[in-house]
Length: 427
Image 1: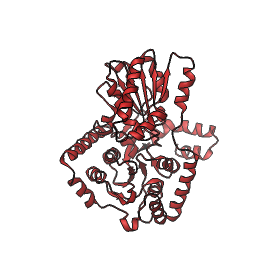
Image 2 (image 1 turned 180 degrees about the vertical axis):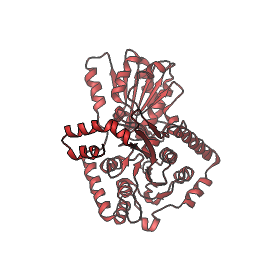
Image 3 (image 1 turned 120 degrees about the vertical axis):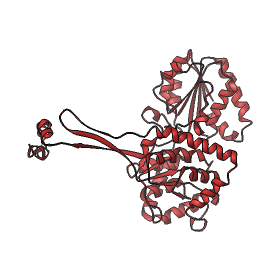
Image 4 (image 1 turned 90 degrees about the horizontal axis):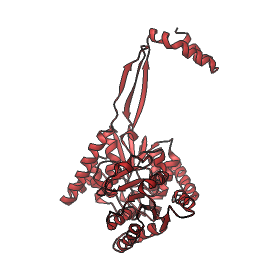
């Protein structure tokens, strides 16, 4: 774990190293993924089957390529009532939040008599990737499928790996609750390729979303343009800005909520109280020993964790913006002044009683968020990721007479006489 003090000599250089640290896939992953994509494009189902046998250790010809809706419905019906109630609460809140994101069409006539507007339409088919390796996440099913449903996508296809043929019933229950149309027992880069290119069994989709490992992220990156993607997601990260009035056990738990995801996850605390920072570090060590995920959390915290002491919390905010974190907690009594200073963050959690983990499940906003400093230019998954906007315009003779001559002039200036003629011939 890295300890930095903003008042120390060499802080600027050390903090820049923290910002620039790479925790994502290297060139070997890119090369391997490219080979997988080529194989699936060329050989379709046969390649997907071979990769599934190799990486997930089951043969889809024997274990089954798909999981039918009846099996998903049975998984939902068989849930413990308390667990089902929690899943339904999460689903309802996610639906409510995302319903407010649906954009409105526009249509009007301007002063020149030109009709102008835009229509929003959902893509026809969306593919959703749900991890099934290190852990299985029903929350990811809801977060990816709900905005697609709200957008009006007609065909929603879920792919999820089933290592050794094991199927996670909670993931199937979430798929039933959210209304997934197809569930395929495939994962990894080969599943992303199948969604993008299509195979004999699987029809291609228009957009692919959902988190995954380095191979999944790299496959999405390489296939962007063949299909739309939500983002290229890297390892999870959290930044907590906290003063000494917090309980250090609370803040330690928040930092570990991301550290337990993966050894490459990153957890950073900014505080204006050095003694509090020490107390949080001690609490992290105590809590790691109690976690079933302690080995992963320890690897993450030791390699990528950091505590940064600053003169004031306001002074921390430009540093936070440089990190552009996936998750940002402002654990202070009045978070608004600090919140007003935030430019770059995937999602912000305001106040001492808003742990990031509540946003992973039941708050409503999407938990699929930009990582690796991409919050500088990207946003979390939303209804808009499953929609596209088509502009339209309509002119009558009078409107063309008003604005057409300027178009002719500009086309001539650009050396495009056919453009100019297509307007001028109507004038």
